[in-house]
Length: 319
Ligand code: ADP
Ligand code: MG
Image 1 (tube, rainbow, N blue to C red):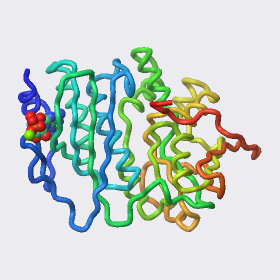
Image 2 (image 1 turned 90 degrees about the horizontal axis):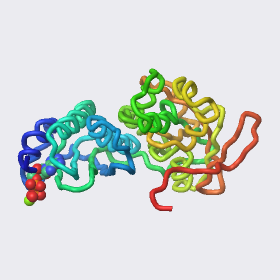
Image 3 (image 1 turned 120 degrees about the horizontal axis):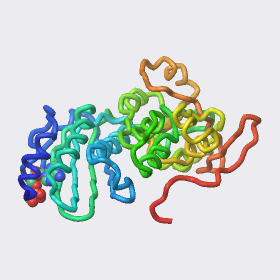
Image 4 (image 1 turned 90 degrees about the vertical axis):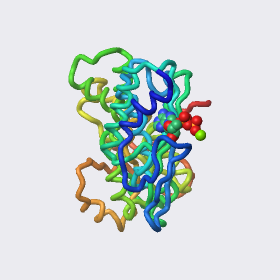
């Protein structure tokens, strides 16, 4: 199969459809029409085989994941997702592999109402780069820079599951339901877009937890010029995680495991009541407080109030 029939026959049919796309896949460039008066938010994320996912990850999950991780970046900005581009590098044009990849991608695109409007296809080591664009009314975007002393720190969902799920995936097919649940957290991350949009006028800062809570929260602390104090006893752990790896390892994974794609955000005291009144289904947990001083520091506090510095932070590609 050549790359043109690959694009026309396999990729284009799964691209989705939006009214604000004037020209989609098929020309030299796509033409989209932003909502009048809104700003555009642009993100990109690359998944490299052997770096971001092991060869055991089924192609449908890989396709789903490539879209989901970009949706998560837009969620962290509070933006409404709209359009995506896909740069696809494949070792071979295997029809069954591409069909599965597109199936997973289409699921994630459709759930978010995003249209794939173009991309590029080349031969080489398996790698997917997705670029996604969303929009937001002026001055409403959530950034890493707005946290202030006295703000409470929250996280959505549960932490550490995806890191344990990746270990399950590397071992092979999971046998028990807990392991399967953890694996799904890695293979099919649920981007928190509705939450991100709801937080536009509530949160002072926001980040998605992709590289591990401590490392990602340190980015917020650095950009906001403050310290983040984490309440260790408050970290939300799933029953499946605790049952699979034990409480101690679960706590460690919750602090440093990557790939959960939950939102971690700060809320000023005056907005706490609004947050509590949010009508939405995602579990939210208060996990700490913002303090002045030592910009960029994350401090761990145990139940008796004893504080220590974390020994490891987030994932880094270049050390
Ligand atoms: P060009 O040579 O002008 O870059 P291509 O032949 O690479 O054009 O692409 C043809 C059309 O298919 C373009 O609209 C491009 O955006 C789209 N396209 C190519 N690869 C992909 C892909 N992996 N996913 C989505 N669209 C793609
Ligand atoms: Mg061209």
